[in-house]
Image (cartoon, rainbow, N blue to C red; front, side):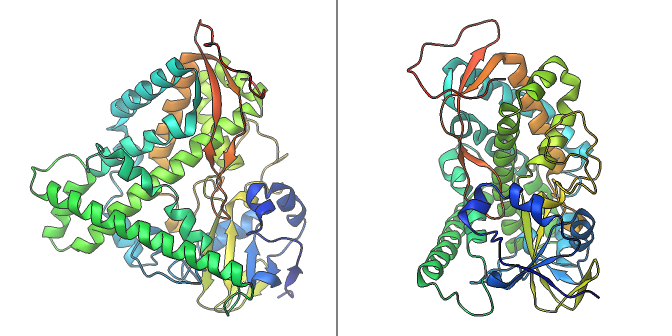
Amino acid sequence: MTSATHTEEFDPFSPSAMDNPYPAYAELLRHEEPLYLADRDMWLVIRYDHVRAAAKDHGGLSSAEGIAYHRSTLPVLFGLDQPDHTRMRGLIRHDFSPRGVQFWRPFIEQVCGELLDEAVATGDIDLVQQAIILLPVKVVTTIVGVPSDNLAKLKLTAGVLESFIANAKVGEDAPDDPDENALRLRAAKSALSSVAGLSTFLGGLLEERRAQPPRSDVVSKLFAAAEKGGVTENEILWLCLTLLVGGQETMTHFLGNMLDALLNHPDQFRLVRSRPDLVPATIEETARFYPPVQNVFRTATTDVVVGNTTIPRDARVELSFAAANRDPRKFPDPNAYRIDRRTDGHLGFGAGIHTCVGMHLARLQAATFLRLLIDRTDDIELIGELVKVPSPAFRGLDHLPLRLTPKGGRPAPAAPANGGPRA
C-alpha cells in the first residue's frame, strides 16, 4: 500500500470551494490516490474508479456515521446502513421505478405547464423562487400522499439538508475556532428544529390520511405494509419526511443547475432547442456536469483500501461525485458541457445502495420542464445575479432572475438590468 498523499491547499468547506470547486478538482485529479486533508482530519476520494468503488463498499464505509460533529440518530433513509436501508427502500422501490413514475407523467405535465405558463406571462421572474421550487413540492406531496395546500409550510423543507451538512465534523475534538464551532452548533440546532417542526406537521397530515380511503400513493402502501408488520409507524413518518425533503431540495437544485449550465453554454441551449430529441441527453449531461449532490460523507468501520491506499478505521471520508464526474480518465474533455457526449456511468445520481431513489422521477420532471420551457419561449436572458446555495455537499441556486420571451412574442418592458447570457 502507498503512503497517504497530503494536501493543505484544498478545504471543501471554504467559501471558495463551496462557490466553485472545479478548478481545484482539475488540479487534485492529477493525483493517483485519495488525498488526506490534514486540517480537516478527513480523506478525500475523487478519482472516478475510486469513488464508484468506495460508494459501493457498504461494509467498510458507513453512511449512518457520516461526519457530523453534533451527531443525529434520526432514521432518515440516506443515513441508514444495511439491512435497515434495504428493507426501507424496498417499501418504495416500485413507486420510484422507471415504470412506477410513468403513472404520474400526466400530472407532472400539468404542473409544469401551469407553472411555466404563469412564469412566461410574468416575463421577468426569479424562476427558482417563483416556479422551480414549487414543481417538486407539488409532485412529491402528491406521490407521497399528503396535502400540498399548505405549500408555505412544506417549502420550509428547503435548507434542511444543507443545515445538516453545515454541521460537519472537523477532527476528533471540537474545532479550535470558537466562531466556527458556534456556527456549526447553530446549524445543527437549526436543522433539528426544522425537522422537529416538519415531523410534527407531517405526523398530523398522516393521521388525517389514515382516516381516509386508500389511494394510489406511497402513504397508502406504507399503511398497508404496517398492518403486516413490515414497517413501524415511526419509520413511516421518517421515510415520508425523507422523501419530501430530499425530493424537493435535490430537484430544485437540479433544475437550477440545468438552466445555469445552458445559459452559460448558449451553443448547447440552441442545440437542444433545435433538437428536442436531445432533451434526455441534456438531463444526463447536467447530472454529470453539475450534480445536485456533489459529495457524500462516510466513516470507515474498518481499514479500507481505496486504490493503493489504506484509509484507517474510524477515518472520516468524503466521496466526491462532482470531482469523479470531471475525471478525464473516464470522461474526455470533462470540463466541457456537451449535451451530445456519452455520459454512460456518470455518478450524478450516486452509486451503490444509496443511488438516488428518486432519479427516475427526477429525470421525468427535468425532461418535462425543459421540453415545455423550450416550447413556450423564444429567448431566456439572465437579468441579474444568480445566487448559489452555500454548501459543501450540494450544488444549486437560491435565486435565478430571468427574462422569459414568449414564443412568437416580445418581452414586457422592464427596468434596465445587468445583461447576461442568452439562450
